[in-house]
Image 1 (cartoon, rainbow over the protein chains, first blue to last red):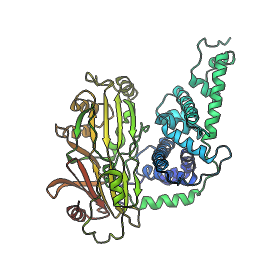
Image 2: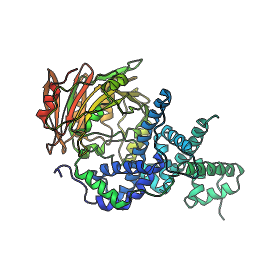
Image 3: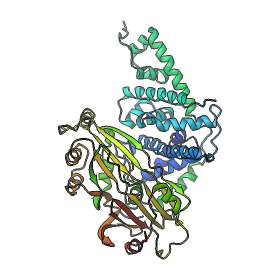
Image 4: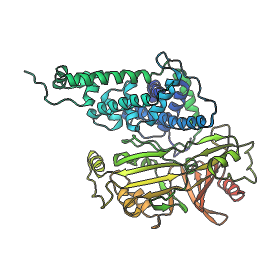
Length: 169
Length: 363
């Protein structure tokens, strides 16, 4: 390992504690376990050389997972738009089966997430990943009072996005 | 005797009642219980929350076990890939990754030229000069969302394309041909193409003052015209040819992109830059280095982490270039700008090898 490129000493300990949740946060965004794990690996690689204090690591990792996953979504969305325009077949990998929403609905959910203002999208995903209001507030540097407002707006916007882009046939 | 509030609780409070009622004040809860309007709002919040929970369901348990995932991470860490600097400690809300070493090439591959429109072009990249910053500086850079709104207008959408012709067709940029591959680099490259990326930052004095107050500092008074002022940063399109290697670090990358441009709708760039650099959270030594960039604002600062890479000047066929070498000597790159186009050559090579490739490029 290069001298000036130190890997933090607590990496394994933090990793073993936080891995499941980081994957879970990413999975809520990308809707696919394998891709979520790729996102989580990316996040931990950044974390490995960061100087984030150990006490802030869980929040940092959750936020980083949400952002990284949302970044992946945005490029997916543009690719899909282009392929639709070109009439190419949809190469999206089969999604993990879900009782509640169909694969097409999942795709629309991801497109809608990608269109939300970033802070709303992150707050939404973190809250639905089980972070408390206080944890979301700390992670996003929001006041605890405004977490509810941000999540509420995100859910409302998500509904509107899904309604607006619902299939018309 | 407890009193209910007269005022309707906010939508945010209603939302919290849905799934964390213990966090809501008693007075608010009692108000809601007896208020038809709030009960209706609560029901709507409940419906949206349930729908969102269903929409965001992940289905299925975790795939790979933690042990396997840890082995994968250990291997990647041991491979010593230069990573983008970590997100800032306090403000991680918006993360356009800051780049280091080889990562510079990736960012420049998204570089481009903006259409002027009715925007006043504030700087145009005609030279490349390195700024040496430590990782500590990088992680301390503030998130601009603390100081206003950041709206991403266009995403670069970097993707793989079948060949050089497709890359050119997608971007209008030709992929320079490598005359002779360095020893150890073999096979056919994969081609990447990316469109333009652009974002508008709208400065808000109110938000900036709030951010400063949270940091326990006072916001310096903004220059006239900056509040509400907009800055557009544009880069791209870009193309790259990438020769892979076994360890994940590309053996060789040749990338070309339109140079990034910054534009302002109002006040002069130098004024805005100096003010932004003086904001709480920007390390003073970095700010000083940035101020040193030419008055004409034509230099593209490359964030080169001091612990990761060294840089030195060179020339490529008469154009001033910057050579970056990782401290461990395993990765090197050379970057130069000519006629508003950035070209970069980098890889798991020595500085002399990347320079040889750069000087031998055709096209």
